[in-house]
Amino acid sequence: MSFVDAAGVRLHYQLEGRDGAPWLVLSNSLGTTFEMWAPQMPALLENFRVVRYDTRGHGKSSVPAGPYSIAQLGNDVVALLDHLGIARAHFCGLSMGGMTGIWLGIHQPQRIDRLVLCNTTAQIGTADSWNARIEKVKQEGVGAVVPTVLDRWFTSDFQRAAPGQVNIVRDMLLRTSPVGYVANCAAVRDMDERGGLGRITARTLVIAGKFDTSTPPGDGKFIADNIPGARFVELDTAHLSNWEAAEQFSGNVVNFLRQD
Image (tube, rainbow, N blue to C red):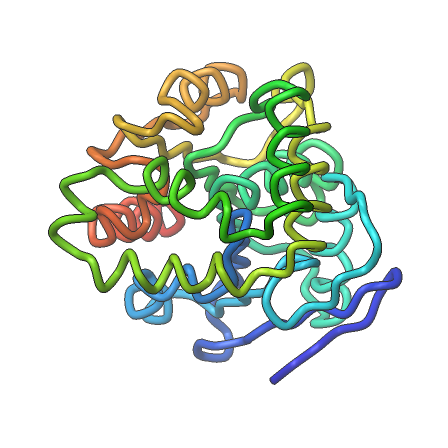
């Protein structure tokens, strides 16, 4: 296991792929670990030097006192890049990871080569809805929200067809620290970078899910329409498009990052 200590947090990360390949950083969604990228790893490792990490409050990373902010999550990535001696990298994030990518594209453009923003948004939900989720997890634990989360993350067809894969994601959610989950909920709740999208200069691919009720396709289209030159792809999935359409997802990411 590899760790980096910076700014009061210990980040757990994994580095894989051949030396000399382009760098790619992967950022997880709320309530998961870097293992959420398992479906993509065979395709990505053929093409990139991949850095996966557990967002603070998740997995084997530490759980400092919250609430957190998107700026903290973004600066954690910068600290990881500094630790590894990476000047610039491609970045791919889904949901909360995509929100982190938006922040990096706006505030740390010199560190980002190409940007893939998946099933995400520059502003999500209402403060009341996030505060209600925070209180529920504080009172009852992460398990209290898992059934609702899974119904949002996967279509009913996928849940019936691939229960084993759904269970892997369920287990990741159930193992998440309630303190870390709540602290990251606050980061997501408080982010609003809609006005800064036009400042992103990185070549950007936006991936959305046709049946995603957490970050509907309209949210992804808004991002793509407001980032100069961004591309938009819609897959026949709910929120976790990298699991529900793994091959299509991986193909779109690899093709975009490899194009001249």
